[in-house]
Image (cartoon, rainbow, N blue to C red):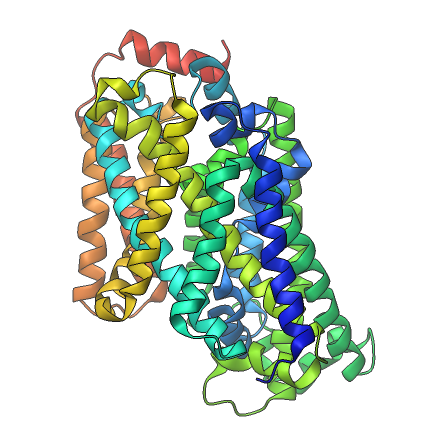
Length: 488
């Protein structure tokens, strides 16, 4: 792909704007509470947009573009629709719980309440597992951006990591969650403009609004179906459950968006906004990907379809804008990850390792040092990406597959019906999920739904069963926690 100076100028302005926003956000941080949860004063519309944008990455334009090219509309059904419904249906439940936890227990990390709900060991197990896996996961995303930069602009792999990782390191470290939220807003605007531009150009190519429906008659018949094997009804139901866990707080950065809301009503409104965006926006975003087989027939590698569409359909300048939107999506997700993981390290891990981290003195400095250090480590991992090879890919895959097992004790610990599920149930569910995932990789699975869903299903069953077997009287601390969440 050939870019001219206008494209590079657009991309350069995008990266510069991220740093400027970080510098502006610096002055909004007076404490670690400001740094990690925006002082609990995040407006619902900012929280909702950030919650929505944080669920995207460059994978949407690479891996998902390939699925849209090959399997058609079913991608929307099992991905976007299940996320939207998971968030909307529970908008008055989990977002409300997270706000109440912050107000009653002053939490700044989603894992802080686990020490009360279970015990410190359980909290530390989940925290350490999540942090280590995220170290490699975020490192892999920096590497992915660098590869994307190299393919689209010719910038070397090394400079790609330094640019994307370095810019993020600066604005996250100095600006905290406010920087993440404000850059999410800027990135959403870039994504919106780029996505609508592609949508309109493809519409025009096929004759206008009627082509939204007419292109399906020209595509293979299975591309218009709601479910297209192996993305069956069973697979969609499994993904619905995984998304239910992830987008209600099982993915820690998404829990932070609710924790940071000022009131319960604001948190619910943020959830509704995010959910509605997931139901509507992907229909526009994916349309060029669905139409790609008609524009670029017979591609050997469908994952290149979106990049080739950009090259074929857009003039210079707009190419730079769309490429900037690809970076925007991935940087939004990585910066959200880094901020929340830093909160977990600062609030959950360090105080257990040393009493001096329990004091509020210099808490903001500690937060910035932790953020800088963790981000730097992820960049180092990205530089070593080629040496990890398949191992790193495996670890990244593990993180995705083990989201459910790690999220089960975190999310279901908030629900009164699971009050008998204590530390034994929580630890067993995480370990059982790991074993189940190992089984899916050792034994061939005929069903993709079973392969993806087995770890989370096993984790959920073990959590419930062990809670029933080892049930005992609920401690006063857990009763107080339950009452605070229920607002009794």
